[in-house]
Image 1 (cartoon, rainbow, N blue to C red):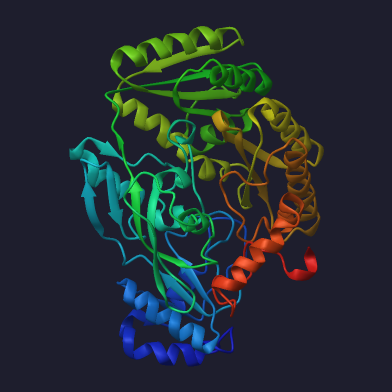
Image 2: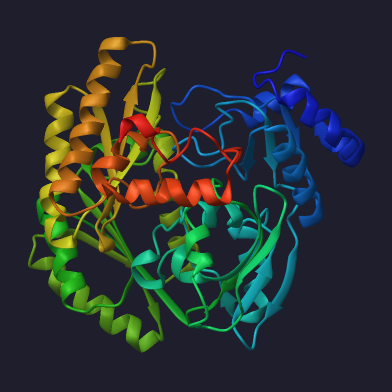
Length: 465
């Protein structure tokens, strides 16, 4: 086998007796684990390992550390910034077989799971308990990957992000040491918060092998609505007023006219191609009814049209299934190209300015772009269709992403509210964090002195600020 990283053969040989046929160098699984949903070039690892226990993960990392071989953790591979791509070769560490739900403590409203458990499977298991895990990034992502990328999604406006819903972790460090961070207690003042340090570290500081998650009660009643507006600015101003009025929305999503065109092309729907809001309320039947009425009255002040409500569970599921197909619906525009999905997050008072700037920028650069957003917390996504082999179009694409990021920072926001850094956002880390990048490098060096954990991600090289 021709390897990408020179240390890979020795590490693979050392691990073969431990893992047997759960360590493979075959072409098909390597290519499968080196692909991604976005536009990034494929980057297969030299081998793919399939551990089933924390002790096996520790043994893999000890061998990799001893030989200086990179290790890149792989969950459901649904991320959009190339987090799981083995850009420097080495071992791709699939966590798919670490997929056990270890405990559900209904009385304490928490669950203990392995990282390969997906959010959909956990909620299926929880259905009979009256509890749920609310963080919903759209894709049926693995919970370990969601923690590693600090995922959020449509429900974050009410239930928070992964940062708010992980109580404790078990983590294997680069040299094979196993540590536990946090506990099942809902708060602690004991020591540094290593749980939050690991959440969002994208597999660069350690490999998550167990998680204790906060659960929430399933709502007694759910009501969802759609409505359209004359302009994106009107829709966003409605969102701002909704949040500032104190209405307890569980989801409030913006979809621009290009996104609706994508839905119509992908799903053969006939929705008006105008800016829309998708809204959902959770609570008791009385509370949901009152909140829905108040939102309808408020939306009317911003020119909302075609307001449609439903409290039928099947119709609510269909609505959010359509919303979660946004990445694929964007792909129905400009067939034959690929989608670059990028996101930013700004203070909610600057949201209308940020969204309209993004739309104008796409028109100026002649790029096909859809916009969807978890706008209740100021986060929105642009899906741009591009041909990676067209140098001129890619140059326009990079002008767009640079200007989008610069504008988000100018408005007091961040270059990514949800996607994470991975490969795609490294160029903006110095601009957003300044000298703090040096502190991040120091933490990386302390926990991973050989630099084997997901190298090439998150942090720019020393000579780039």
